[in-house]
Image 1 (tube, rainbow, N blue to C red):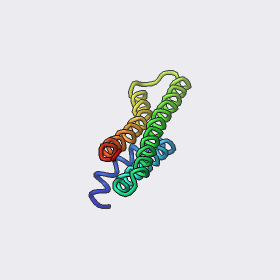
Image 2: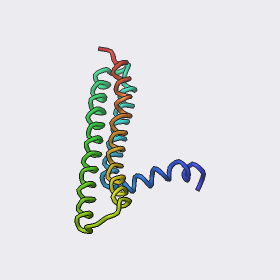
Image 3: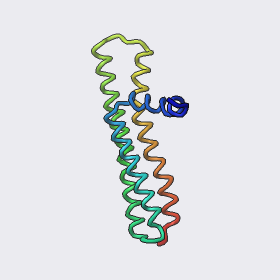
Image 4: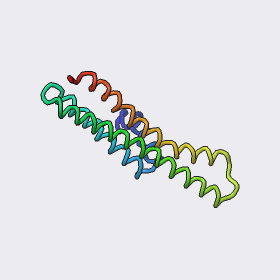
Length: 130
């Protein structure tokens, strides 16, 4: 293994797995789709303004979907954590904090999936001709 994969990528992979692969994968797909639509929008900026605007709208919709998946994953994670708390009965504060951390990982990733394409969308809209 090289330095980049150990130091930079490993913490992200660990957080991805902690957040639950199902919802984190859905959010990652939304992020990749939104960024792809933004890139297509930029590439068609001078050639086909109508297609560029369509890609801007699609990027916006997909980024919002990623945000919603993040909140849904977080809510389902919280319900699972409270179910486990109810089944165990008495639980330590450390265990509760760990459960809350895992539940909010999907929310953070969903917010990132919303914010990054949104910045690109704002720039793309500013560059689009009416």
